[in-house]
Image (cartoon, rainbow, N blue to C red; front, side, top):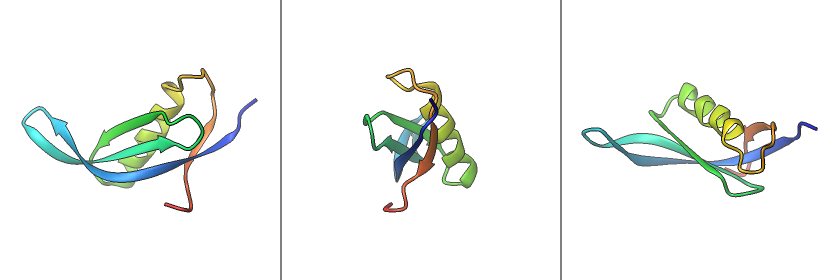
Length: 70
């Protein structure tokens, strides 16, 4: 069963090939799984949410969204 799962989003600096770059980190509110993406755009946020689904440690196929409490 697919569930809607909220994630917290954090603007962060991530380690890139040539030093630190701006990026996004998302954290699942249910299991604490984290994903990262370079950039600060909406596309970066969407990429993190897709990665969340692909890397779920519990093998879920949930629909991930950004928490309103962010």
